[in-house]
Length: 103
Image 1: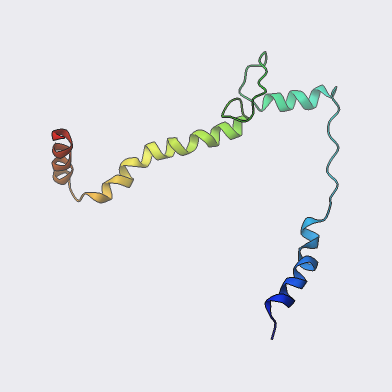
Image 2 (image 1 turned 180 degrees about the horizontal axis):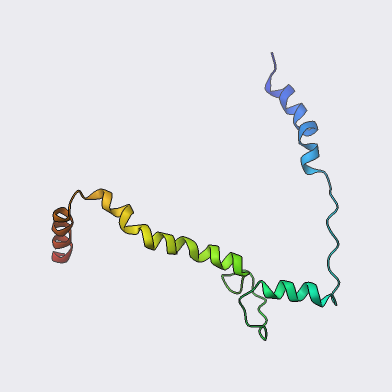
């Protein structure tokens, strides 16, 4: 019967290919203007601006920005649908609003 110790001895052999070194494509040359123009076009930032603080929600690629705002947009559109399961009728909602206004 296999035991934990024998299983753990096989993990490196099984996981080895997952962590094998692969060659990455070479980095673009600093003077490869076509590459850098394509990179620059992915950002919403004006072309005459430079933004180096990438640790916040500052300048980001367009696709990242779109995904960042998509969740609040969907949440705002469906918030009522998420909350209405609490109440069975508009009468109950009106009663709840009266209680909230009285506070």
